[in-house]
Length: 369
Image 1: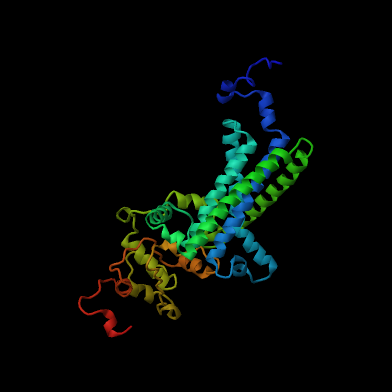
Image 2: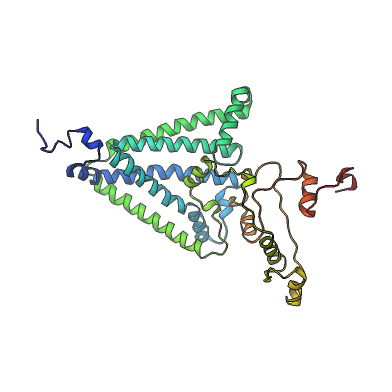
């Protein structure tokens, strides 16, 4: 037996108190450890890109590749990489944070840490996959609660319905896939990274990470040069998942901070009269009088109403097959929180276009469409 002389390496309580010896720090930051971190990045990036691509494919009827095609191979490839640029950065940040907290601070074995985190990420992605296959959105507390409550009271939905059985089989297959991928990552790190091949693995993984970060930086730079840019599908997969899971789409209508009437009127004039400036004291007539004659005709206003369900169930702005909606939302007046005056389409639209409540008496449809 040998004694280290300072008792830190042999004393688990000293290690848990964050008093590391120099040999321990060198071991944690050694070439094999860094090589495993590089493989960890790849092990987490692959399912991230797969599940995000599946999500985008569910939004685009012909697939995301077909939606982005056009304008040559180079431009199509650039648009495709732009969709995943944020993911290149997010996965790297996620791996580094987990490495710092899980391995350096909590002293969890790196091989097991990689396997567990990859397995958890795959399980969350499996829930995402099932969610956007059924309702077209990422997993959130509302969907999960409704689904579990319904299945508890109506198990025949899964056992007797063909679609339900397919979903059940898909869920089982995704769990098996998560376990298989996590196990493969564990075995690859435990037996595949040695002192001999670690430098080669580290160089290859470092080259991959640097290349992807350059691509992400270029995509971010190009986005900042666009006018009225909205993230849409360019959002990172994990940040969008975290936003959905924590229920950020929930809202309290009575606590909303609405813009003032002057602001709404100014935005309305800018849209209708081709961006002509209008002060708070100007009315529509003065705006028209001060505008060139060619622009004095008010433009048409298109009102798009998403009915029946909440906006989060209509993936229009995030749909790569429908880029026009993203452009329209950047120039128009949009309302994410709208309370209808009547739970019927015809009467609700009547109120939207007139600003008044529907008349009492006979149905509006009695007078024709």
